[in-house]
Image: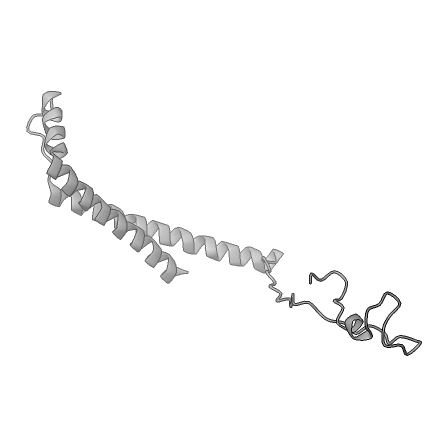
Length: 136
């Protein structure tokens, strides 16, 4: 659980970091970052600027904290589940494979020994009859 959880949370943080960098590049290209810096300066924050290096370091540190906390929480929940399932019984899942092909049953031989039945069908046709409940 430790390996899977750490790989999962690490992947999530990596994807979010890449998405953040791509959004930053798009925002810089269209001037949104500069516009936000000007807006912050106009409302009283003098010389407000974003530092990409400092932002990335902060997001990486936050991502490492998320990976550590998420992994620890997942492992703790797995341990608690295993302890509870030892006492109360866990979840059991049984998967059955059923054969759903139609089964052909042989019809009983006619008592009179005639080649055809009462309704005009041959004895061979009665032998090829499907079992009840199966589609043709």
